[in-house]
Image 1 (cartoon, rainbow, N blue to C red):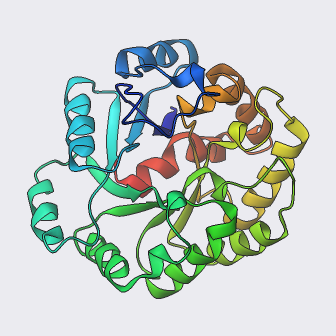
Image 2 (image 1 turned 120 degrees about the vertical axis):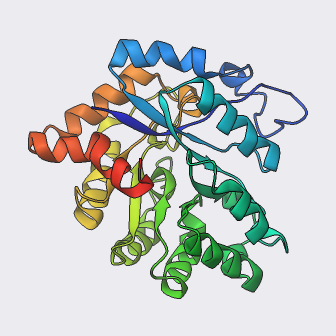
Amino acid sequence: MIIDSHVHFWKFDPIHDAWIKKDMTVIQKDFLPEDFSVYLNENRIDGCIAVQADQSDEETEFLVNLAKENPFIKGVVGWIDLTSDKLEQSLQNYQSEKIIKGFRHITEGEELGFLLQKNVLNGIAILHQYGYTFDILLRQNQLSDAVKLSEKLPNQPFILDHCGKPDLKTNHLKDWKSNISELAKNPNIYCKISGLLTQGNWNNIDEKTIFETLDFVFSQFGIKRTVFGSDWPVMLLGGNYALWLELISKYVSQFSKEEQQLFFSGNAVKFYKL
């Protein structure tokens, strides 16, 4: 069984989705469940986690509604205002929506130190009280914040998106490795093996560099805390779905069948309580 732990859906709006720049024409359009269903059939994908791409309550509602219409969406990672005075009220309202497994903030767009602000820390702590996970989305030069966050909230289930976005263009990975090692010491932190096709030079797949990156991630997190994901459709900037799945399948072929099953689905089922 394969669960893709990181998929986005959106109805493209050039003003609202200004983060999609002029050199990203391949993703300047709608991407909806019917588009992703092609990959389900072609690549034997059994389900996915829909992850927020917009910071609004409407985004969470949008993904929940898509999940209700498309059973292959096994869970939703929505957005919520972590600093709102009405955070607990919102979480109480979401308790009836069992499809919501956790939340994410696009922290890579924030200043260094955002996750360590008192009101943000309090908000993430409240997520834990209500049984929700938190996806950490940061660039490699922000990863020290994730380390400090995990030290302050050691019992919160965190999952690091896209391997912490290592800079595979420059390959200056000393600080990235140091922070990944620190994060991996916390048994409540998992790591998504996703998004690497867009961390290097687009459309120039450097298998050697990607495999060396994976060697390090797996050496730190192990097979039981690494989770398969694609970052579709953003990953289309650097390749295609079949290529990514083939690349990852080749890499994890070194593990036993049981371990591969954990990576491709079991770990996601455990972390997100699918």
